[in-house]
Image (cartoon, rainbow, N blue to C red; front, side):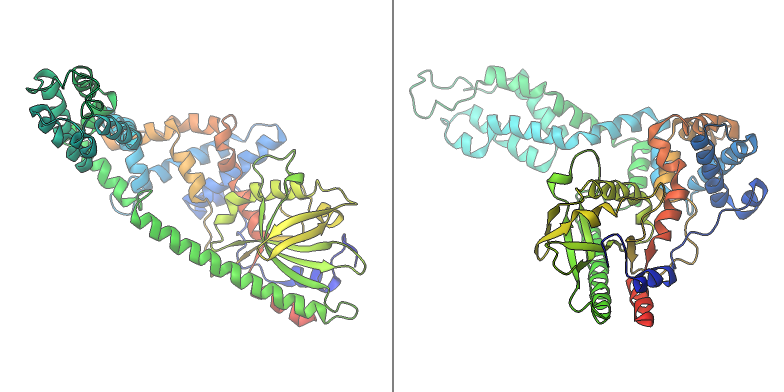
Length: 471
C-alpha cells in the first residue's frame, strides 16, 4: 500500500460503517420549512442565504420573510418565563436598562478593581507594615482598612477612607527623623489617605454595591445565576472536570477501537506488524506557516510502517468528541489544521511529539490530508461515543446565541418585554447583517458545517465492527 492509497478493506469499512450522528436533510422549500417548525425554518433560511451569498446573488424575498418570522419566534420563546433562555433574558434586560448595563460593566472589571484597591490598602495599612510603625492613634486608625478589603466591604472601606482623608487621626505626623528604624516605612498619610479615598477602582466597587439595591439589578443577577455556573466558581470547575472525564473516556474508547482495527489489519497477508496507533500528536513548528487558527493536536492516529521506509504513513486521523454537537464549531479549525499538515514536503519526514514519544511521519502521507472544498478527506474523521440524538438540533446553540445578540434582536426583545407592538420587520437589520458582518458568518454556514462534520463522524466501535466483518 502506498501513502496515497488506503487499504481496500478499510475503504469499504469506512463507507459501510453507520453514521448515526448525521443531520437530517433540510425541508424542500419555504412552505415545508415553515410547516416543519421554527428551528427547521431558521436552518433552512440560513442555508438558503448562505448559498445565495456564496453564489453572489440575493436570497429570495420569501427566504428573507421566513428568516424574520423564525427569528421573531425564537426571541419570543427565549423570553418566556417558563422554559425560556435565562442568558438571553439577562442580555435583553441589560440592553434595555441603563442601570443594569452600568452594573454589568462594573462587574466585568470588578476583579481588576479589587486587585487595585487591595494593593493600595496594603501599601498603606497591611498588618505586617503597621507593626513596623511607631505606636500612635494614626496606626490604630489604619488597622481596620485591611480587614474591610478582605471582607469585600467596599461601602465601609469607602466611608473609612473618606473619613480619614477629611479628619486625619491624631499622631498622623510620624517621627521626624528619617533615620529612625521604625519610621522608614511610614507612609505619607497626607497624600495617601486622600488618594485612597479618591481611587477610581474603589469608587467603581462602591457604585456596584449601591446598584445592588435596585430591583432590575437583582433580576439580572437572578437570571445570570440560572444560566449555569459562574466562571471561576467551584461549580464551573466541577462541570469542567466532568466534561474532561467524558472526553478522556471517549478518547480511550477510540484508542482501544483503533488498536483492534490495527490488529485486524496486521493479520492481512503481507501486513504483519505494519499498523500501529498513536495518541496526542502535535503538529511540529516546521509546518506552522501559512495557516492561522489551525488545530495543532491530533487525538488518535492509525499509522502504517511501509517496508524499508524511515517514517510512518498516516492512514486515519481522528478527532474525538464526547458530544456530537461540538464538532460543528470545531470543523473550520480542524480543516485549517489539515491544510497545515498538507504543507509538508512530500520527500521529507516530520517529527511529531506524541503521548508515547516522538513519531516520524512521512510528508507524502501528510499531503494526502488536504481537505476537499467542503467536509473532510476520507482518512480524517470525527469519533464520538455519545448516544445518537433522537433529533439533532437544526440550529446549534452557538449560532442562536450570535443571532440573539444582534442589536435588532435585543431591540425586538425590548419591545416585547415592554408590551409595545413588535413587528417582525424590525429584525430586518439582523438579516442584512448576515451578509456583511464577519461574526455572523458561522451562523450563516452553521447547517453546512453541522452536516459536513456529522457526515464524517462515527462511533469507533462501529468502525471496528465494519473492519472485523471484512477482515
